Amino acid sequence: MEKAKMTVDKDFTIGVVDKRLYGSFIEHLGRAVYGGIYEPGHPTANEAGFRGDVLEMVKELQVPIVRYPGGNFVSGYNWEDSVGPVSERKRRLELAWRTIETNEFGFNEFVDWSKQANSEVMMAVNLGTRGVDAARNIVEYSNHPEGSYYSDLRIKHGYKEPHAIKTWCLGNEMDGPWQIGHKTAEEYGRIALEAAKVMKWTDPTIELVACGSSSLGMPSFPEWEATVLDHTYDHVEYLSLHQYYGNAEQDTPTFLARSLEMDRFIETVKATCDYIKAKKRSKKTMFLSFDEWNVWYHSNESDKKLDPWQIAPPQLEDVYNHEDALLVGCMLISMLKHADRVKMACLAQLVNVIAPIMTDNGGAAWRQTIFYPFMHASVFGRGTALVPLIQSPKYDTKQITDVPYLEGIAVHNEEQGEVTVFAVNRHLEESLPLEVDLRSFGKCRLIEHIVLESDDLKAANTAAQPNRVAPHNRGDAEVSDTLITASLAKASWNVIRLKVQ
Image (cartoon, rainbow, N blue to C red; front, side):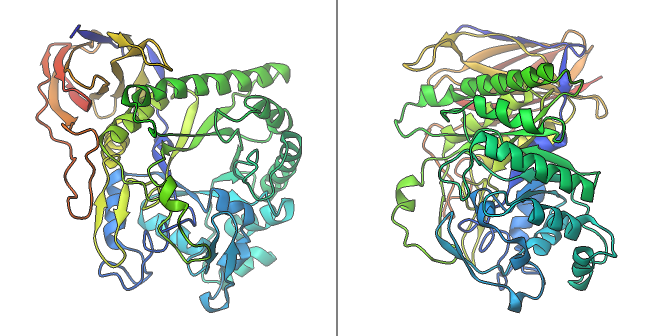
């Protein structure tokens, strides 16, 4: 195999990596809440009913922010149903996923859980069936100190101190015909503007995320973004992006190249934001929140067979394999390559529902294959992302051409005196010789070379075999002054950690 090269310089920076790039997502969908983060009576559950084994794994991921309560769920969500005495809460038909929502676990419980998970809350408001009034009221309930109806109601419910939630999403995927209260770009832009105004009048310290297109494949993309921003540009800080990929055709070379489409998606949204910036003669830069992203396709057929109106049925329970972990790694690298503009992101979702963590009700919890690249990036990918100058052999697929076998980036954590190189070898049959030139850093020493590899691309972790696919630190990277040499195993995710001396 021809050698791949990466050159990085500490002065050639992309941007500071916002820790919220490693956020996640909990929706009232399937077993994400009931049987996932919340299961009273479980052997590890605490007094609040939060599963301790899941909390420990979430802490292992170091998730800094979690989006809640949806997702499609939020477009039919009456937040008042989820607060106050549990015995008085209403059971509802949940139309987005055709289940019964008991509201046993609600808004305040999620705030409590997030604190125990060392995470902040990214709260979404319902702009589907509801609108401006409900949006201002939940901000008042959550963030106003006292002396008003909704702040005093929070205090009555046992929460003297405000929740002080900083980040709020203005609805969810409102361009999707599947959405409760689906709107045109003009309709959504207007209601998002008015909701933004009253939410910030209620609490001027909050930041807001407007809905972008539900995916890059939407017919209205990117006109939707331009129209929505025309209304909301001066009132929001972020625009959302959503994208999932699958390999239903069993074309792994194309599947692993999908992150190149993600790059183009981000670039197009950036360009659209900057067009509106220019149109409005604004000095403000719009940042991006990639608040839904993952691999999702394994569970599609089984979900079609579920009977409706169950409580917390096993929906969207993708069992992830090794090749899925490789694409998740590539997608993480794509976001790091755009760390100047992509400041928040949410791996969708966190537990059981297309998730890195899986559980059995009443039983064990285990880490899926995608857990590992996400954990590595979250733990070791803090600092400043550096421009990666890459030379790599390439391949073509039927759909995507000029795909580099090497996908990679480096992050410099100046405070810790470390540089971390993240690299994926997309080649399915051969190892990839790699040289990384760290010419500006002076002498470095190797801390470790972590590798996630498997001889079986379809290998997955299960309750019976929870460690079938797991990383090791026996990578062969060597460092000579400022030059790293390594052989990246076929179809592998690699984390090369260095100490700057």
